[in-house]
Every structure is written in structure tokens, then in C-alpha cells.
Picture 1 (cartoon, one colour):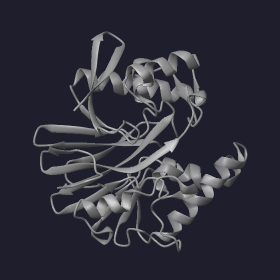
Picture 2 (picture 1 turned 120 degrees about the vertical axis):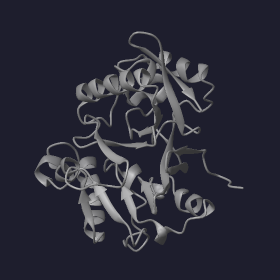
Picture 3 (picture 1 turned 90 degrees about the vertical axis):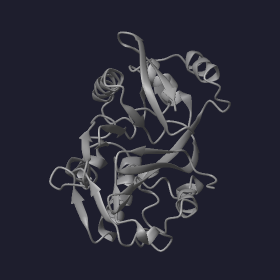
Length: 278
């Protein structure tokens, strides 16, 4: 029996397990497009006790002879997260067995667990996959300097990680695995991506950071968070994927979806959505 791990779903030839890296303290004040009181009220109605907390998830995919990890959590950077490695072990997998790490994007709470305390790959035998648009963005010092000191620090972390892994592949140029494809979902970052598993007539979309506060941003797709590189594009992407997920009855998963790890998007009327956890 597993402990400290999220639920598992069988998707065709694959078994997908949601693993927690922990929780990061954020603030509803990071949101724009909604009044703070309204945001708090939505969180309370959803039964969320600590309204500001953001869950950090990663996903382990096993099947077809592969062991794939999507994102690596914060990895205890700034004393945040760091639970993923233990939860991978509890799931019966050794880090050296992971053959592939797929990245949705390169924010610290998604790549922070890729290096160990000595700056070496935490998943020594894994090939790293990321969109070329995302890599190019974080490798562009001139662009990052024009944004903020935080962006420059994030870029430095990405470069150290990028250089530490001997095998890095771009999702636009390389097939990932049988029945697993990258889906471009730009806005949160320039190369933000999701990953679609479409196997034996079963589908799961792991959508990265389409939402950070899911109950708020699914009910109000216009709500942006300060971490969004292009808030307008992020909103357009969010609306499009919510519509698709609702229309196709698509099972979704997300890095900040909450403790359940998996959900459906329901739409009682056109343009209005809510979460149904499973």
C-alpha cells in the first residue's frame, strides 16, 4: 500500500500516478481579474482550508517498457517542496530507473528537483525533454534581464540544469513515446506545454500550469496570476483547453490541480466550467 502519494489512473497501456512534492505558500494577491474577497470565498466554498496554498504535483508514467516523470517539483529549493523523491521511492521506483523526464516549462517549482545537492542530475539515466521555444526563452540572457531579477535567477537555474543532463531533446523535433505527445499551451511561459496520452481509446491530458488556483481560474478563466509571462495569451489558452476538455470529456491532470491529481471539466452552460475530481 502506497502512502503520501496521489491516486493512479490506467490510461490504455500506461499507469499514471500523481505524486506530491509538497505545498508552496503563495498569495491570492498574485491574482488579477478578481477581487480578493471573491477569490477567498471561492476557495472556502471549495473546502480549501488554507486559501493561499498551491499544491505541487508531478506525474509518474509507467508502461510500454518506459518509466517517465513529468516535471520534478521544487526539490526543496528555498525550503519548499522536496517530497517527490521520497514519494517516487514509495511508488516502487528508483530514480535511476526513470528513463525520461518531460518538462511542461522551466519555472523552479517544475525543474527544482532535477539536480541533487551537488548539482548533478537527480535522474542520472533520464533524457530530458522540453519544448525548443521554452529552452530558447530561458537561455536568452538579454530577454531575461529586460524582465526582472527573478527571471534572470530562474534562467540561471535552467542553464545549470540544461547543462547537467547529457541528453536533452526538444519536443517539437523528437517523438517521446508510443501514444504520448506534447501539446503546445503557451502563455504562462512562451513554450509552456502539456502532454497527451492517447492509448487504446483512453485519453489523459497533463496540462501543466493552465491553473494555479483551479477552483478560481476554471470558474473564471479571465483570472491571471503574476507568474504568467503573457496573461492575455494564457487566458486564451486556458479558455481553449477548458472548452476542449469539456467537449471531449477529457480526463485532465495538472501540477497545481490539488490533492486529487485528476479531474474532469464540466460545463453546465456555454463558457462556464467547474472541476469534477475523480
